[in-house]
Image 1 (cartoon, helix red, strand yellow):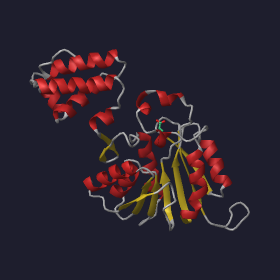
Image 2 (cartoon, helix red, strand yellow):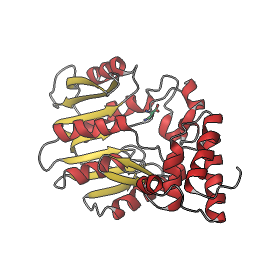
Image 3 (cartoon, helix red, strand yellow):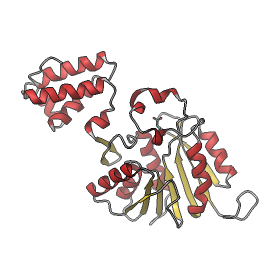
Image 4 (cartoon, protein in one colour):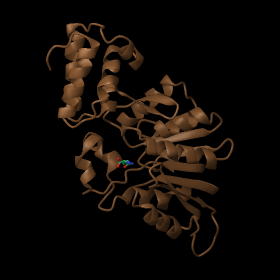
Length: 288
Ligand code: GLN
């Protein structure tokens, strides 16, 4: 990138580079604000502000990485999720707006003083958002990845959210006890899904995205195991792919869940399914 001396010049050059690389030119602003540790209004108010040669060089490097495809959230190390700004890194999925909707449903379904389990917490986004918005809930969050748990714990400490307990566990293996609500955004992308070779997904951990040939391996496991860890009448709430609503409902039904529902995301696509487990002793729900 040619040397930029002012904010306006740096932005103009970066937008041109991003456009040439088929990225979104408006990302130039957020990345420069991050680089200068200012907010965007500073950039608008001070187009003539001079960048030091070091700042120009660092910004050029940031834009080059974005042009090559590195997700913005990994470049800034941050992503907003509901009311929190979370640290993110390449050990975890980047929190998505669709998952905010999962949190929204949990807030409505969970009883007062709920005990909640979030298997596969990644950056901690779901557990920490719930802790922030329902301070009386007792929340357990697990992950198989120690790197992910370390990040989630950093996020909890940063936001002083002390009601979340973090446990190193492969789904339920390290857990005992029963919960009022089990909530998860598990991996649900099929192994050969072409989206894995596009956009941000190329940079995110496969373990957080991919779940077997039909993308349902983790959802199948969670649906099967969850009743052992649910209080009578407790809810299981899962995020899933846009074409997986019917398959999720079938899995929940086969396992003996009740009140099975699917919710759509803001794009109108099936995105969450949930159900309650009543622990009845009938032929359709085996004793556990
Ligand atoms: N919603 C993500 C995507 O396809 C996948 C997240 C997940 O597997 N949990 O972009």
